[in-house]
Amino acid sequence: MSIDPSTHGDAVLDRLARTARLRGPEPLAGRLEDLGAQLAQDVGEVDKALSEMAAARGDLAERAAGHLLHHPGKRIRASCALLASRLGPMAAQAPAREAAIAAELVHAATLLHDDVIDEGTERRGVEAARVVYGNSASILGGDHLLVEALRRVHKTGAPALMSELLQTIADMVAAEAIQLERRGIATQDAPDELATTYLAIARGKTAALFRWALRSGARLSGLASADVDAIGEFGESLGLAFQLVDDALDLDGDPAVTGKNALADLREGKITWPLLVALSRDPGIAAVMQDGGDLTAIAARDLSAIADRIRATGAARETRAEAARHVKEGLRALAQLPDSPARRAFAALVEGTLGRER
Figure 1 (cartoon, rainbow, N blue to C red):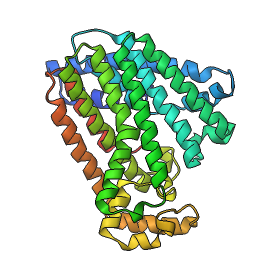
Figure 2 (tube, rainbow, N blue to C red):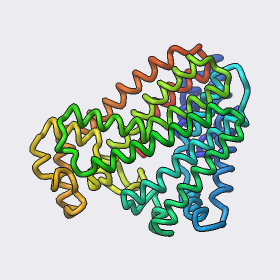
Figure 3 (spheres, rainbow, N blue to C red):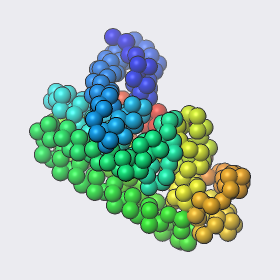
């Protein structure tokens, strides 16, 4: 059975397909291809559910949420949950799909909220929901998605998933608060303190949801507790790597490909790994950053000049190298699990994460 990842636009499926082809006619190649086909079917079910929500034309909150859902992302969190659900001895694909949908809904909710906080104007290549419907509607849309995510998890009948998701959402809110508090004053911190703050934000905002998605799928598959913990460690490392690549793409990515405003993180004075690296290699950058890092009032050409100076330090390259280091840590945790096509497929997933351009 062949894999057709193009119908879902999912980098995970694409990587699985190529891995299977490269391995030729060996038994593992066949198992990987079968796994990819099964995953494609499940991702298709997730897409269908989210498309139905996007088409709902109810109140203002639903319409704002639907605006974002109508333009799908990479579905990597859903793919993580679905792939992890094939690590253990139990077949629980229906509950796993609910968990996968929940992961995507929580992620979408944070995007709706983030665009209000960051005053973003573009998301996934189109106008942000806050631009179309207003800030209040975008916030309500995010709240609507969070409630729906909790409903989906409740349907799995696994109380542990609910309690862990509530903690994950709390971690994400706390990390967002830290980021907001430290915005614009990054250059005032000592290097070690800045790195600690960055990692606390990245673990909460990004890695926490990756960890939950993987743990939920693994738990539903019947994996032993120690193995669930191991896949959770892998998920945290994967999430950190994903955030680091995001940071690099803010600096050197093509907005036409990323679907995001160019230099958005830099303009908003956020702590990012490239900025952290650049400040350590070229301390003079701090002096040209208005108000210790708040660049919102700087003209576009001046912002571009600062970005060029940061790029000249090799910050983007070093950020991707840091992402690769986290991937290696994650793979060491993953190696604790019994060997299986699903476990090997995660190597394809992380390889795709490091090489992504959006």
